[in-house]
Length: 340
Image (tube, rainbow, N blue to C red; front, side, top):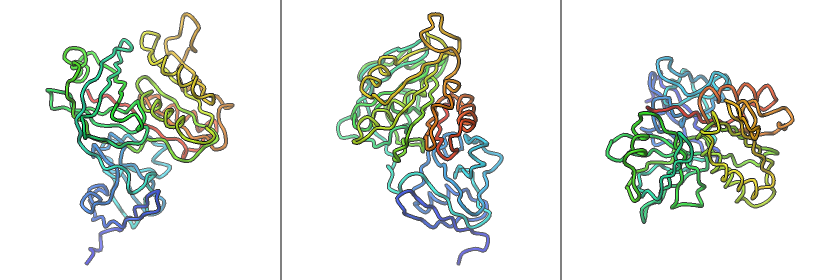
């Protein structure tokens, strides 16, 4: 018999599949889902990665106050919850913006192809999967990467599209004294073996063909945007107008300009705006942040927005885009929070 204090959660996925999940009182929804093999995306299980996000469309799910949360207040007011820290107080229905058959994470091995310093604090790391290994992902998702010799893992978004597998590129911000940063500076070598696990994350390119896309990227938050742009370009049919607003601290921190030029050459519907927080003496780029570069004229009635970068930038972008008329449900975000 079902205990009277259990609640039934209907987990509804984008492919129309529904799973009925019994959640005991005091048990987080994700933990109950894992025990029942309900395919909710997850990774950190601590509230920081945002992978297990779902939208409560009826009922009552509340997130615990004593755990970390990568969700902004606006997102929570929209009904979004992280399943790893959500408790059920009534029978509820939760919608997930991905199919029930989305990729199951797996561990694979990859070899280092190249390490290129592309800015004062950024590296392009090129990997190639070992023969026979494969990782599935949607553009925008990330993998966990084990730093050789440390036993520690960090999370990075792919900067390449799924069609480029077994090749994978990553844009990695370096810190003065971080485990991954020190490895890249002092130890990394061609043909090093790196373990990967993935894919993870609910930040990915949506399938609907919007009238326009707006992408706002801060620093290495550009990585998933490059992956998304490549998939948009590869799709058949009419391409949506896409505006990418990319920002860095200063010219020394700026990178991937050739990548952006190539994509603008390939994609006539793509416009790129580059902003520098500390200004640009030559006047070649706009002064300010990438959020302010978006104006009301850039927004359409069904614009979809993708945000990736530091938490402060993401929070500011949510408010700015809503003030311009972008529906909250059409804003998708990934925050880059340093692990070190």
